[in-house]
Length: 337
View 1 (cartoon, rainbow, N blue to C red):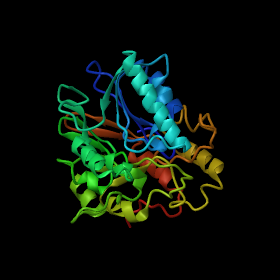
View 2 (tube, helix red, strand yellow):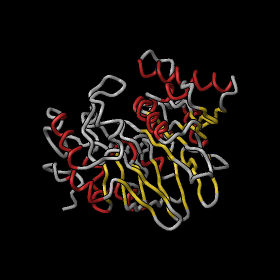
View 3 (tube, one colour):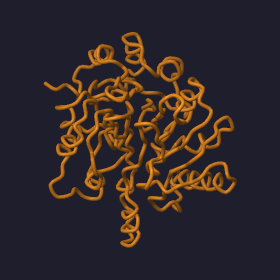
């Protein structure tokens, strides 16, 4: 789960020799491509787009257009009116056009990003599958003429190795989670960057507390940017997760250190001295500015690497190194006390 600031980008790598990587969302193609190039990956099984929010798709089209990368499948769907003139709608339309053009030219095959009869990718005792949304949700919304809550149609991805499972939540709200069967997972990428999960209404009997109780993760990851306008993560919505799981935010926000935006450069230097973060080689250490020209935030956990084995798992950064960074913050949101 790569640190791309306020947004999402996940690369899923199957066991060696058993399949090709899968990219789930791409806020920044610079970071994703650097990761793929670093490990020598020149081919992808799939690129999956959770939904058309800017912070999930900003780098997808650029990734598809790279000449040094071969892609077999693209999963996406239209979850809103893309004829709008807003710049983000224009980019969403450009992404749809790019994906469809690649399908026509036989570069890849485009699929609807909904629950499929078969996994996106699978092998001996492992699988990558879309568990939400269901196609029925599209037909219901189309019949009712309601497209005002795109997050309701956000993809949720399940990665399984043996009995170990990771759930990657996109921006899916509670109404979507209520549709998913078998919600248990050891690692949970918290949906909507730790923000509100009320889009589409809250189903009877549902709450954030119930969601985290049913998923029951050992580790909960929040993909979030230091200076994000929605002020994610929300203490109200991730509070229940803090009580029961190890929380790993990719970047620190003013919720944990009030002056982190004003003093980002100094804090970034402190973090990099305290702990060698997984993503530092190409993201925070060398480049003060990302490929979009916007100043970067300050890493907390940074990029989070989860390695699944049939009977166990490993999470990086390890707790001891992450604690060195957490010790820098005055009032950390994930404190269980």
